[in-house]
Amino acid sequence: MPPRRTWALYRAFRRAPSNNPTLFLVLCAAFPMGESFSRIMPYRTRIKVCGLTRQEDAARAVAEGVDAIGLVFYEPSPRYVDVESAAKIARLVPAFVDVVALFVDAAEEDVCRVLDTVKPDLLQFHGDEAADYCRGFGRPYIKALRVQRETDIEGQAACYQDARGLLLDSFQPGMPGGTGVTFDWKLVPASLRESFVLAGGLDADNVGQAIRTLQPYAVDVSGGVERGKGIKDGEKIRRFIEQVQAADQSISGVKRQ
Image (cartoon, rainbow, N blue to C red):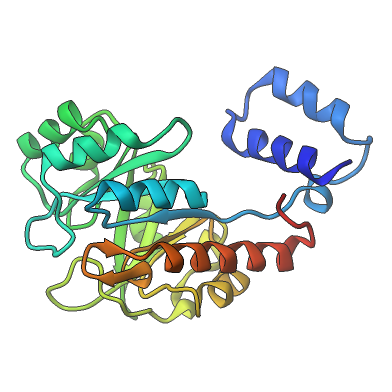
C-alpha cells in the first residue's frame, strides 16, 4: 500500500470511534487478511504546543503540523492569556486541531467564562482539582500530575478514569507547570505506556529520546520552543516536530508523508 494512503487510513483509525462499523469495513478492505496493523501503520506521537499568547505563533504552530495548541488561564504564569485574546487565537485554529484551555485550581465561573467565550475543545486541569470538579463541566478533560518519586501515578490515574488523558509533568515546588525541567522517566508505570501525555522540559534535543524510551501517546512542549516566555520560535517548533517524526519513524520504520 502506498505510504500516503497508509498514513491517511491510520489517522482515520486513531481518530474515529472504536465502534465505527463503516471504518472497520474500510480497513478490512484496505489491508490483506491476517496482516497486522502494527506492521503496516506508522507510529505517530501527537504534539501539543502549550502557552501560546500570540496569534502569529498559533498560526505557525498549526502550519508546522501540531495536533493541539494550549492556552494558559492562570494569571501568575508568564504565559497567561486573557479571555478576549484567547478567543481571537482560537478563531484562527482550523478544524481537526484542538484548542486546549489550561487551568490551575480556577473558580468555576472562570472556567465557564472561557467555555462560553473561547469555546475550547478540551480542558486541562493542572492543579489539585478533584475528579468531581474536573468532570463537573461536562466537557472532555485531561488531568496533569506533577511527578516526583513518591507520586502514586497509577493510583491517581484510577481517580480520573473518565479523563481523556493523563499528562505527566515535572514537580517543582511552587510551579504548577512550565518548569523547563524533565523528571525521571523511569517513574512512568508500564501500565500507562502509550496512553499518557509527556511534558516537562522537552525540546528538540531530548524529545526523540523521550519517545523512543516511553512511546507516549502525545508530547506537550512550551518553553522548549520559545525565544522568550510566551513568545514562540517558529524554527524551534519546526525542529521539535521534525525530531518527533524522526523518532516515530525509527519506531515504526514507516516514513510520514
